[in-house]
Amino acid sequence: MLVDRIILKLNKKFSNSITPWATSNCNDLVQLADKNLDIISIDSLLIFNQNQILSQDVSDLRAQFDKLQKPILHIDINGTLAVGISNLELWIERNKCRSILILGADDLVNNINLERFLNSIN
Image (cartoon, rainbow, N blue to C red; front, side, top):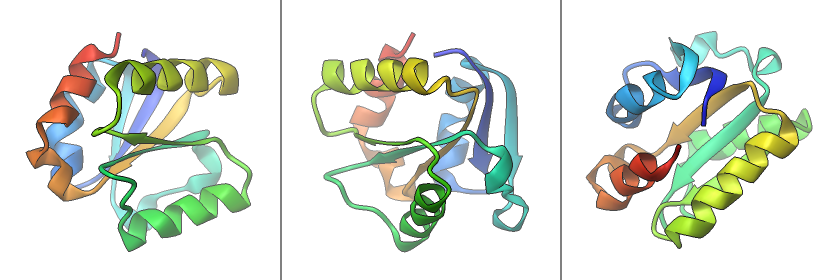
């Protein structure tokens, strides 16, 4: 899943847990505080969730991306692994995603399916 840039939120449990994976899957890893997120310069939004549950801050950012008509993908890590990976690869290719903001709830770090999913992405 090599992309040009992956953006993660600074000092978030979820971001910290996927930093090693993100580093190996992009040319440039950027970690930003909420106040420094420049949505205009970010191509797309990737949201990891479990059972389709989104926190309010993730829902708010999703609404902002939607308003700007930027590509958004939800990955339910409790869903079918092969389908999730296939959807992600097709989404990146079809939308020509180069700069992706990746979000997820902090409680996802306790779900073993997150690591399984990340380790399955090429």
